[in-house]
View 1 (tube, rainbow, N blue to C red):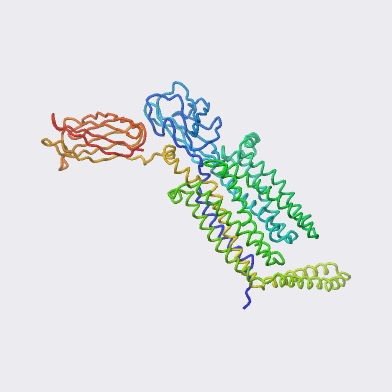
View 2: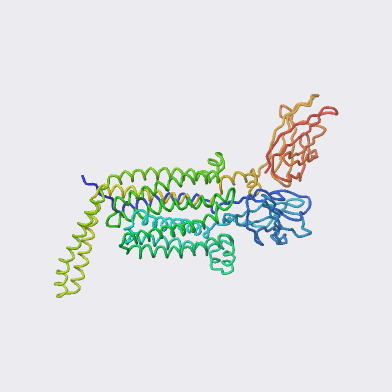
Amino acid sequence: MTTTAPRLGTALARLLILAAALLGTLLAGAAPASAHAALTGSDPKDGAVVASAPKEVNLTFSEQVAMSADSIRVLDPAGRRADTGEIRDLCSGSVVRYGVGLRAGLPDGTYTVAWQTVSADSHPISGAFTFSIGAPSTTSVALPDRSAGGGIVGTLYGIARYVSYAGFAILVGGGAFVLACWPRGASVRPVQQTVVRGWLTLTGATLVMLLLRNPYTGSGELSDAFDLAGLKAVLETKTGAALTSRLLLLGAAALFVAVLFGAYARRTDPKEKKDLAFGLGIGGTVVAAGIAGTWALAEHASTGIQPGVAMPVDILHLLAVAAWLGGLTVLLVSLYRAPSVPRSAVERFSKVAFGSVAVLVATGIYQSWRQVGSWSALTGTRYGQLLLVKIGLMCVLVGIAWISRRWTRRLADPATAEEAVDAEETKAEAAPEEAVEETADAAAVDPERAAQLARQQAAVATARRKRERDADPERAGLRRSVLTEAAVAVVLLAVTTVLTSTEPGRTEEEAGTGTAAAGPAAVPDRPVDIRLPFDTGGVDGKGVVRLSLDPGRTGANALHIFVERPNGKPLDVPEIKVALTLEAKDVGPLPVAPDRIQTGHWSASGVQIPMPGEWRIQVTVRTSEIDQTTIDKNVKIG
């Protein structure tokens, strides 16, 4: 039975639908531009109640950030600015800290600190928390429901990031495929179109990112994309400089593409062609490394530990990805649309792909250690979990590549393939001679008829060549396996893109305590209810204390104490005392003197919990003049 290749439309559509579904799942679960720098502390702390107004508010981050005049705003209960707007650089050594001064004479109440900045690896971060002066109060401040880098602008920016990676891979990998694997492909139109489209895609995506950068890191409003003042400010940042440099390097890449598909494709002298290929290889490598460097200099590799090593490693990683996945894309297009791809070209690409995988493994191990840092972060953080997905997809891709390599070994010998091409060309040359005579006769009678005959003959010749190409079972199998590789590569590239916008596992673990301080309370607001048995040793000295602290959070709380006998009936005692201690911060003991309400019921209002943490509640029960005991229990208060 003759094996035929699946139709490109049907097979490609099915695989792209699957890839799109997986891609959508990944992007839908991706948080918008997760923080890479993290807030690790603040003074005052989130939820703290201070006796008097502080002179300034300080924020501490896990890594360097870019601050502007409005990066830290302090709002009073009515929503008015309570800060002076002067950002102070308090960084010292490895400690990244910034502060903003507060106005004098601030009244008591709850104040909101809203901050937004850009981390050193180009991603916007933001957050908000509250503290109170004197006592908590109601506040009219409405915190934004969208984090920095979110919304429609964040979505468009994320798509542009993905598209730019894809364009880079096709441009660089396609050029490498032609020079290293199939020089004759420089004159094949589908190959030319694919590489040129890669250049156009990367250029267009870079321009979009440059325009969206201002609203992406600022207001989040799409209309601000054409704000010239904002664009000027972007060009002065590290990311703006990287995007501008990428556009300049793409100009050099356009010259490379023009020479590759122009002068190089037309060369017939073997020596001249070899010399030109050497020059294109050197120049193309320099340009490709420069474009890859625009990512390395502005993103993950440029910050954190060992940036001097991480940036060259990141450039090698990106070049290896491009050589493998970009070359795979051009090979797929060639197998479906080019007249014939020789076995030697596929074998050469197989060697290039193997070398690329080796580089990816070596650089990937280093990057994983640098960004994850521990086994717990590998499984317990979003970055680590995405990295495991990426490793799994890499294994699948290598497995499919192994299948493609088996199909390559079963292809016809190059001589046989060339004979088939020569025979096909001979047929194509003979057919036009007959067609010319028939068309000439028809033209003498009816020019429209002649044009119709010419179109029909061209369609018949194209269909004949396709049938002859698809009748080769080995090439059909290779096309199917390469098509599957490409579909998996689409998802792999999506995972890689999401990884670049996800907080590294090492940073997330190191900033774990800061994340709690900068976000919501450690535990939800709920009354703290505890039950403490006691025995003072005297008459009627046994019983149970039930204590309730409502709402069980920082700020003012209502305290209720119920003293009961072992049978559950109220027990009247002469005295109850309470003390609160936060040992981790050396706070306390803070004494509380409840008032007797009725038999067995004591109460106190306005009990202040100045900050969240693990508090020890001590209750002293006195049942007679000489009999008393102290019981305690630790509770977590948000």
